[in-house]
Amino acid sequence: MKIDHSVQFETPAKRIQEFLEAKSSAFQPFGPAASMIADLGWIMLLAFGGIFLLVIVLLVLALRRSRRPAAVRPPMGDTIFIALGGLILPTLILVPLLIHTLLVTKKLEAPADALVIRLTGFMWWWDVKYPEQDITIANEIYVPVGQPVRLEMTSGDVIHSFWPPSLSGKTDLIPGQTTVHWLEVDEPGSYRAQCAEFCGLQHARMALMVIALPPDEFAAWTTKKQNAGVEVHDPILQQGQRAFLNEGCGECHTIRGTAAQGKVGPDLTHIGSRSSLGAGVVANNYGSLAGWVANPQALKPGNHMPPSYVQAEDYHPLITYLMSLE
Image 1 (cartoon, rainbow, N blue to C red):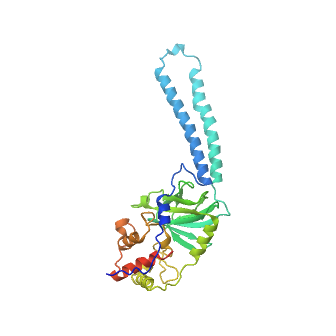
Image 2: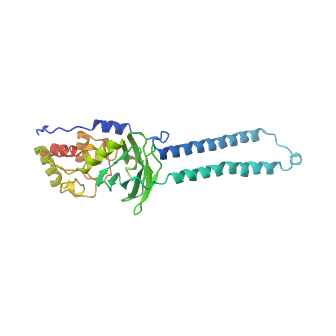
Image 3: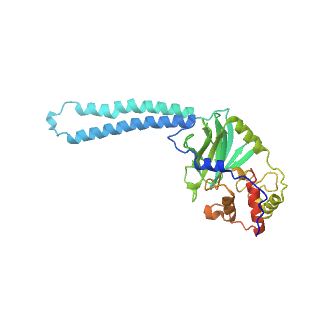
């Protein structure tokens, strides 16, 4: 088969590099919510670590202490020790920690004037919608730097859990319910999130990228994503679009501006601009996409997409068409 490479597209190398180097450590917070959680964690670690060391010291002293006869023990000695170690010290330590924890929890409530994003978890990928901007993408969340973001989350099948360690805490996605999560990013960059609730075979390979852009770049990104569904004129891309529709891909996937309006799988309107495929399984490039379309079970066993049986002459145009959807 002769492949026509007249259509050129740019592999998102920068996006792939950012995906591979995404920040994902709770010890390196890049947002106010993550900073509050990290500070609370360090305070608890120091407090409880100090208590643990104190207990070890007392245990060693008790083991080394010679046992006295009951008649010569100081009166009220045991009672004072029990009152001090079992009531007074725990109260002085635990009550302030409880108050501080409640104050931090109160501050972690989602602001009312935040950018609203609706996140739905599926086995094993993420559907991301911007209701006010009328944008739908998958497995990536774009946010503006320095602006609070309100995530309204639910699940389409089993319980999932959204956790971006560098940005905020963990919140469950529950079928039939809407949970709210708040985050804000201090610096531009890519931040890895993960499903933190066991949800089946590919639970560990259900990643999501939070990509923070400066406000002006986020506005440009929003405008670009809203201008979807551009008519294709290149013969190769037209052949690829026909193959997509004729092979039944549109029964599961949506590409805006075409007859493909499926709701079972991820929206592919902007698949060419994604940094990864399969919710973080492989970097998104021509070869990976070709392999995924041919046999997604080889890359992510158990996912709900069956192998594709595309005609040989349509294969290159189809992948080229999908890669052009940015």
